[in-house]
Image (cartoon, rainbow, N blue to C red; front, side, top):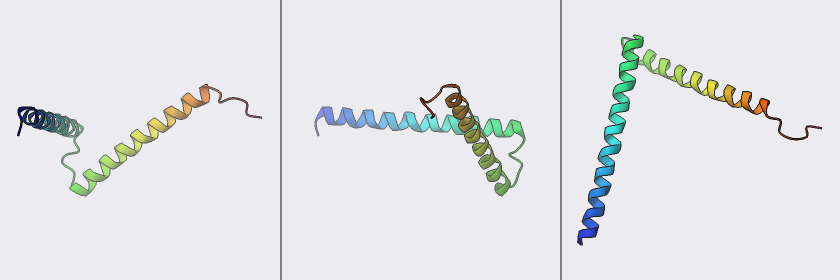
Length: 79
């Protein structure tokens, strides 16, 4: 193998490591938020449901915001 190939593989591995570390930091941050919210004591089924409800609420909020923005800007002639 050439040096350039080895350098490229090293860079790819370093990127994977950085992505993994970022993912782990996010998991820790989410766990800390869940702990502060007091939901970590819930059984797994309830915990899953709680996170699903949060996700749905978040998505509903995003959809509502996008609808509000689009209603503020007319989309051309409606006749």
